[in-house]
Every structure is written in structure tokens, then in C-alpha cells.
Image (cartoon, rainbow, N blue to C red):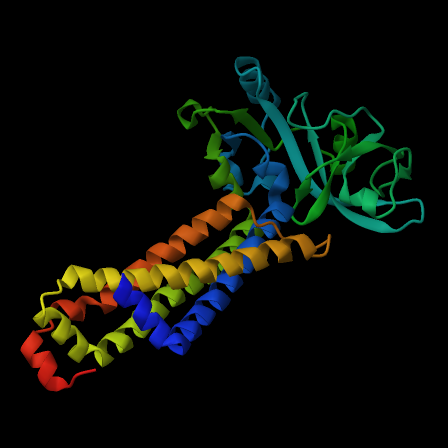
Length: 344
């Protein structure tokens, strides 16, 4: 332990440079992870905020929910069997405000359920982001495919789908706009896929989210960047400590000659790795939380404490693996041979 501290004091700039690089890489990773989580919520908060369960759509839809049409008898059978189940439909559309300005929304309708907003014919409940755009309770909205007018009944928090605010409407109004009588999906909280009805295909929440093409592609790209940065940090540790170890072969030979065990040398290297990583992560976590706080309201950024802790643990593990792999040469050091190569 003392040797580790003495070496870090002696070679301050080397360790400061490594710490700075780890800090920048980890900060970028936290920010991209926050953007990934924020975009995930902005894309599918309507689905993600539902409890775990099973989603059902017709097999003929081939995992494309907006092509699914569940017949009334099958729907009634499932809803009668599962009292907390709900049938619902989602379609992208638009509404016109009082100034005749078109606003893109995701129309959602459902059977009676606590998981979705209950609205009557001629009423509409919008995501709260629409309130920030000037729409108020009691405002009148229209749609070109709807013969009547919608009265804004209220606003719902965190109701987004496909990066658009959700608009809850009644089943009667939904049928008039889209000319369909069947529902697209059935959700059964805590449902078992083995109980899937004939003609229906079941999905867990995670599986259903991956059927949304925009969600899957977006999250795959961002998560790939996050893990690529994590791997880079591990490579940085491996390269840095490898170069340090090459320069200290003679020193390791002397230390081994006087009786210092190989495990002690590894502990020295691990101590340095943990010290650098903890300080770098502490600074990057603090700055990423400041960014989370200062980010513009419209920016889809969400860095939760759980995500921060998970990434921090991953960085420590990757750093440990990188440093350990680079230090494997320490085990091969022969005291006499190393001393002959030159003392440090």
C-alpha cells in the first residue's frame, strides 16, 4: 500500500493524465446513458410505465401491433377470465388547436382500466407536455377525420409514445376516426405466455418494446456506444499499466529478490487503479448530475441513481480486469533476469 502511494506521488503527471482520460470517458458514458434513458421514456413511456405482464396481438400481424385486429369474442373471453386485463389500441394522428395549428399525437383508447385514462365521448386527455405548449383544460380541439370536437378534460404525466404526446380518447371516437371496431392489443398484468389464446401471440414487456422498430433501433445504437466507451476505458487501463510495468521490470525484480510476493505487487497495482477510478467516477457522476439538473426541459435526458451505480460498478470491474491482464507479466518476472535488464 505504501509503495503504491509513493509511486503515485513520484509520477503524479502520469496518473493525472490517466485519471483525466477515465474521467472524460466515464462522463461521456454517463451523459449518453442519460440520453438513452430519456429517449427511451420519450419513445415508449406509455408502455414502460405499465407493470410487468404479457401483451397479446394477433399472429397474422407478424409482430407489427398496428396491423393487429383482435376479434371481439376473443377479447371478451380474455377480459372475463382476467379481471385486471385491458384491451387497447394506439395510432399516430394529429389534432388541431383553436389556432388551427396541427399537433402530432398518439391516439390511445382502451377498455375500462386503471392503467389508462378514462374518457367519455367527445373528451380528450393529453400528455402534460401539451399544457406547456399552451393548451388548457376546457380548450376545444378538432381532427379532420372526426365529425365533432374534443374538449380537453385534463392532462396525464409521462404519457409519451413514439416521441409524441399521447391523446386518450373514447372507443367510440377512436372507431369514427380510424374506421375500426377491433382492438389491437390486450395487456394482462403478470400474465403467463403459456396461457396464450389461439390466434394470438404473446410478448413480455421487454419483447413488446422491441417490436417497436424506432425504439429498438434507437436503443440499440445508443447502448452500443455506451458499452463501446466502457470497453475503451478497460483498454486504457490495460495499456497504461502495461507500459508502466514494462518500465518497472527491474524494480519488480529487486522487490521479488528481497522477498516481496507477487500478490503484493498486484495489490499495489489494484490500489492505484481503484484510487484513480473512484476519483474519476466521483467527478463524472457529480458533473453528469449537474448536467441532468441544468438540461433544458425539452431535452429527453434521464440519469437515474440506479443507472449511475450500475455503470460505476461496471467501470470498476472493467478497470480491475484491464489492470490485472496487463499485470500478468509480473508473475513471469525472474528477479535475477529483471535486475540484469536494468534497475529503476
